[in-house]
Length: 430
Image (tube, rainbow, N blue to C red; front, top):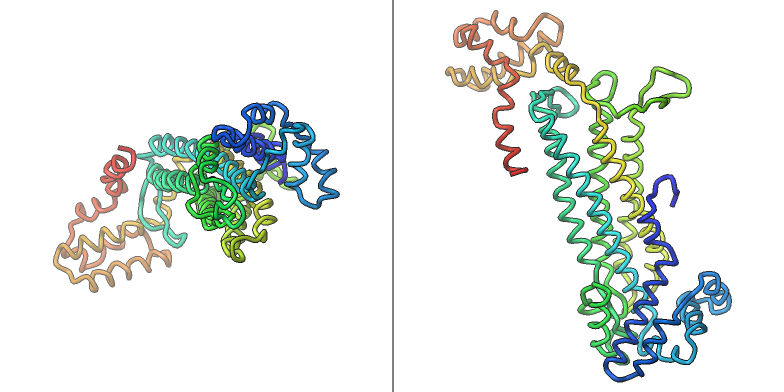
């Protein structure tokens, strides 16, 4: 993972130091459970906690011989513990520890991401309220459609990220599971009590049927959720990029003092942060397909998923953590050009009011197909530069027969389109 696109808290979560610390805790809690059942001396469990140290360099040194990272870890802490180390790992298999430690990491990563999402939500909420009544043009297929408000646009993103918080909470819960059931998961050599004890200590729930590994459909859902969130980030980033285009000019990213937009063209101010978010979103989504493919394992266990997870888990969560925080900063600093929004409303010489005219003619007795032909025919004249939409309509005999000039003029009021905005805001924000 490039440090350029990472934040310290999430990076430290995926460090080998933290991973082996979790592995040691699982082993030590297991010994506590055995001591509670009277199967090992209490003094041994206490000694394991006090002496159970490890060294990454020593683990690597032992692994050179064992070719097994987890055995190297056990050997290293056993060297430091001494005689009591014989009680470690009783009836367990390495996956019991590795999968449970991985669950603890994913849970912690999920909690960080939920915090990030809540920050994005709050920034969007404030901006949506701030610009609730700022009228701008709505676009469909990239073309001018009808007026809306910029706050209403942002409210939609707020609602989407609210759903993402709920998705992330569910995904975090789904992977927050402990499995200590021994080889092939049948508890032959380790009591279910051990699993229950360790799960409580680690803040995890119990995997009902682990078959030695925690089923990877849980992890697939977690990474699929990251992919959905990444797409939400890209959708908002793409909206900003489009609105910053020179021809649109309605919003722009904050341009810092001393910032340079182009090495060749000093006049440039580019939406580089939003473009960066678009790229980072692609990286996060790239983890989804491998996670789905990891669901399929041979029989009770294989390790085809292991190498995949060592890559996608830190990369996807670190990248998404960074992207969510960058997105918050982009929204906070967003420059909104209200005047340009107003100018763009009038850019098509009144064509955006075509539906109101259509409905008004229908309400006056004209058949819909007939009214559509009249309105569209006049619109085409505007396309070809013959004049303003309202003026051309007022010259049409069929329109004049049904609508007075005052009635027609009233149809060209952008505030008409905001009359129910408050209802939607109350629906979403309360």
